[in-house]
Image (cartoon, rainbow, N blue to C red):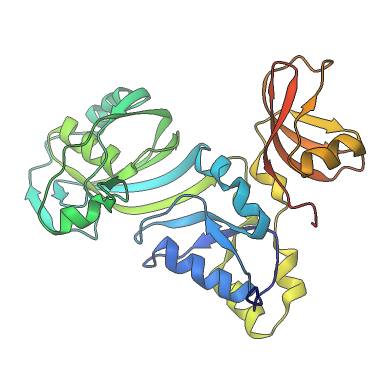
Length: 304
């Protein structure tokens, strides 16, 4: 006999403004509890030090969270020059102090060296896993694991302000970029060392900054049991997938896809992934065109 669900089968995306000092997982559990949702997942962790945009997927939206994990991100970051820490941010222990023998002109000249396609060695204080354990667990035990450099792209690295020793930059980057590592590398390039003191994520994919909601607002509505108001804050499932071409299919094809059937579509020549909609405008999910056959990949539950 199946265990009865206690929560709600609620579907959508909450664009949370993550507060400082909390882990992404802790925030996720809070949001899940406020919505009384049966299922929830986030779309790329922010460090406890960091604030800003953290899309949280509820219910069926969790099926499409990978698209947000893979999306470009934008950050506002403040670095303190002259100090390195073991975590490359202000939550770590200072391991080195150096004189700041650089001026603004040298800083501006350094920034282009950290734009474009780069190879970045992930920090030991990351959630990347080695033999099933996160690297940060090894780091806390004083163990260093060899890490391979990974390709990242810094689309832009813009100067905002410099009030020594604090340097503020705006970063637009690809998935997998560690801003702490970027700042540590920049500090080493400048010869003075640096670590992150403030990090705020301002954009994920195409989500607007103004659409973010605070944890306090969600808590307030949940305490008053205003679930209708909470649900109004949810963004539609397909907002997680704005980079794929759209394909509208007949009701018959939509039904077959929803039940996992592959469909031969000789008239469609474009290959790759598509977001699929029914004739009525309902979002069906994501399917992939391989030669002349449409293969279902991630689909909304037909009962939805």
